[in-house]
Image (tube, rainbow, N blue to C red; front, side):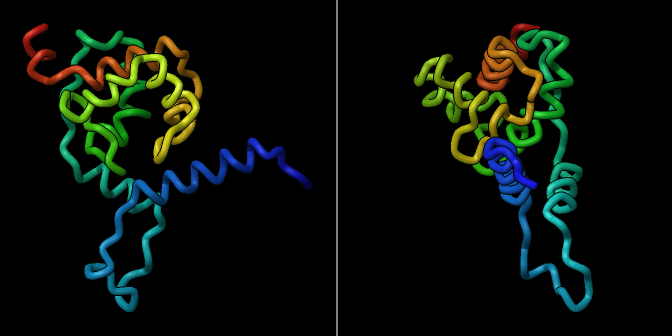
Length: 146
C-alpha cells in the first residue's frame, strides 16, 4: 500500500507540530512514578492551564471567531513555538512589513514551525487575511474600537 507523497508530508508535518507544541520538563516527570505523557496530552494540559483572553469581534468577522479559537489561537494566544502573540504589535510588526500576500502564503502553505493551512483547512485566502489582521491588531487599539 502506498501513500501519495503529499499525504505522507502532511502526516509528518502534523506530527512534528503536535510534538513541537508540547513542552516536557524532565525534572518534574519521574518515569518510575508516572507513565510518560503523550505529546497530545502535554499540549492539551498546557492549553487548559493557560488563561483565556477575550476576543475582539470588532476586528474579526463573527463567523471567524470559532475558527480563530480552534486553529490560530491554539498557538498565537500563548506564543507557542515562538508564534507571535495575538495583539502583540511589536512581534507582528516585522511580519506585517513582509506584506499581506507573503503572510497569507505562509499561513496557507506553512512556514517554519507553522503547519500548512495553519490547521484551518477550510480557510480561504480572505479568511487568512482577516485572521492575520486580527492577530496583528494591538490590544489597546482593539479596546478603543469597542
